[in-house]
Structures are given as C-alpha cells and as structure tokens.
Length: 274
Image 1: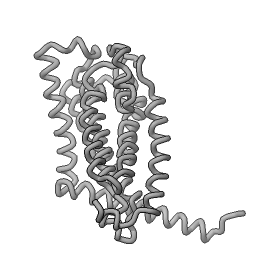
Image 2: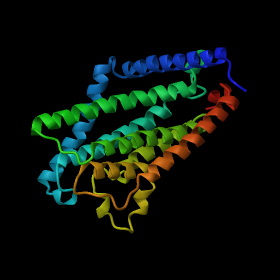
Image 3: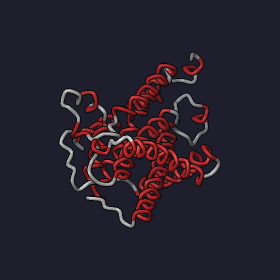
Image 4: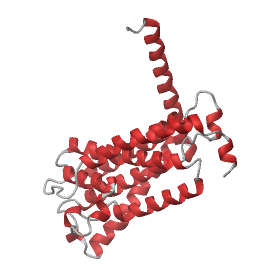
C-alpha cells in the first residue's frame, strides 16, 4: 500500500516542526544556565581546564608521569577529563530534562522526548565547542598537535556522550515513582565515575583482578578507546568499542520503550504523592 503525497508532505512538515522546536529548546537550555550561550561555553571549557591543570601539576610535581602513556601529558588528561565531564553532564541533563509529570509538559508542543533530545544536544554542543577551543589552544601553545587517528576519535567521543544520555534515560524511568532514590543513585553513579571511568590512569596497566570493577562502565571503554586513537604508541588491550556501542543501542531501546509506557500510564497525580 503506497503512501499518498498528502501523507508524505504531512510527515515532512512534522519532521521540520520537530527540528525547529528542538533548535529553539536547545537555545533555551543553554541560555537558562548562564544567561547567554557564550558564558555556557566558557564555563564548560573552564571546568575541563581546571581539572586538567590540577592533575597536570600532580603528574609533573609528584612524579606520576611514568603511570601514563608516553607523549603529550595534557592530551592524555584532556581525553579523559573532557569525556568524563561530557558523560556526567549528559546523565545530569537527561535526568533533569522532561519528566512526564513536569509542568513544562503541560504545553501542547512539548513532549518528554523533545526535552530529553534538546537538553542532551545542548550539552553535546557545549562540549564539542570546548574540545575545539582546547585543542586549538594546545596547537597554538605548542606549535603542533599530534593525533594518531583523528577520525577514530569521533566514535568514542560520541559514545561517551550517548552512554550518558542512555543512563540518564534509565534513571528517568524511576523518577515518577521514587524521585529521592533516583537522585541518590544518580549522584552515587556520577561520583563513582571519578574512579571507575579510568580517566587518570592507563587501562592496559590495570591488573586483571581489578578489571571487573571498571569494565562494567561504558565510559571506561570510551576513554581508553579514545586514547588508542589519540596516541600512536598505545593500543587498548583491555577495552572494546563494541561494549559501549551495544550498551547504547540496547539501553536506548529499553529507555524509549519505558518512556513511552510512562507517558501512557503516569499521571500528574503521581508527582503529588512524592
């Protein structure tokens, strides 16, 4: 059965309308945080640079450079810290985005899916710009910037963000029923990422007995794979790009099915009971 031209035109118009709403919602998300987009970008860059500076001093002064990959120390730290911040930011943005019982959902054009997509893309936008500014600054300061395989950096970078969105989406499914427990679990997970993400050490140096404590975390795999793409003398032996990829695909299917179910079954009265 063929689709009529009217139906195709209607679907196309709805797609354009969704994209337009997404764009304006992204702008609203960025401006609502700091007043304007420029301050939001500066804040994202400042957070990354502050942590990089602190740990750069530790590696240089305390003498921990032997525990990292031979090469650019700052690039090693940036590949870990930037992906860590982007992942945790994606979790936080998704969790606080569009709950089905949020007052914002009472406006006709708004849907939880639109709010989640817009909030997550706003975070990705800020961190892509932050990465561009930081790498440009490194190039200007040092006169060169050596990346082993820049194209191979794209997938781990994207998966670090996407896995954060998926985890936030799974947390969001708990929110209408147990908001306090959800906030506590979300906070614990984000704090645990300070260690389990592996952003400050080389995964290949991790003893096999310790590997299960880190291997469950998709961010751990994304960061290590990103370093494999960034450094010519490093090949990730204990992580795989397949794990975060499958995690994102399966988690996204489960999360969207759960969000659809919540949209059909959870009413505003649910919020009043919490």
